[in-house]
Length: 235
Ligand code: APR
Ligand code: ZN
Image 1 (cartoon, rainbow, N blue to C red):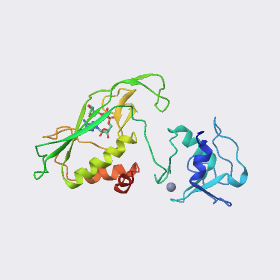
Image 2 (image 1 turned 180 degrees about the horizontal axis):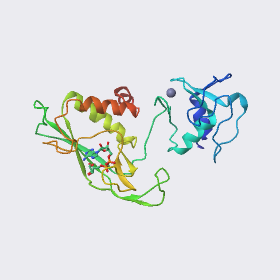
Image 3 (image 1 turned 180 degrees about the vertical axis):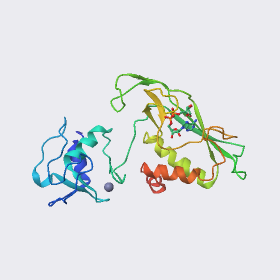
Image 4 (image 1 turned 90 degrees about the horizontal axis):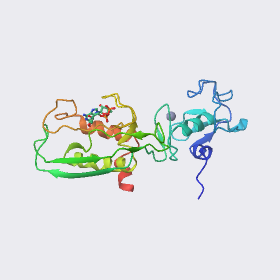
């Protein structure tokens, strides 16, 4: 089956705007009433009547061609994220390289969670060659510090976070390929936008326990990636 074109994907999430407001498109900074400032490869011409669209859920308005250009700059997974309010249309996926996610319960308690045992997650990603969804396709990427071990309390909320992390893993959102802010190395596997605790009995790095807000923060970060409890039940 032939996939949808970028323009078809974008239009699926848009309503037509017949009379654009006197505002600028925040993607290209040109007025919505003027043509898109974006003239690049892969962006065809559009008729005047459909040059501006309104995203159906959040209502933010952009030039159709600007949204198509933005979509083409991403990993073209059929989803779109409003650049203003981050509302996600469709199912957002990332560019995490192939690897393994495993977990088990260990019979020890984390600082701050004395009443329960601990879930240990083990991520393993080997080095490889970057694909078209990565910053430098065809070039190798490194993978440092794997297997990476992470910890969650084995409480009701900790298990909920685990369920959502499993969804995030399937959607390739836990890691990405880029430049590590810790080491400065480029073309390497890095954590994406969901924080993990990699220290067990101490907190020397700031990525340990106790941290009373941690589980709620992670749930919020997962929500920002489009992953909620309702989603994980639909799977
Ligand atoms: N544990 C957990 N999260 C971390 C750690 C760590 N030791 N170091 C950084 N992070 C978080 C950062 O707060 C940031 O939000 O990961 C995000 C990306 O940071 P980078 O430094 O770009 O990520 P990366 O290079 O993958 O991580 C550095 O984390 O797990 C360790 O072995 C890994 O030493 C490496 C370190
Ligand atoms: Zn929006």
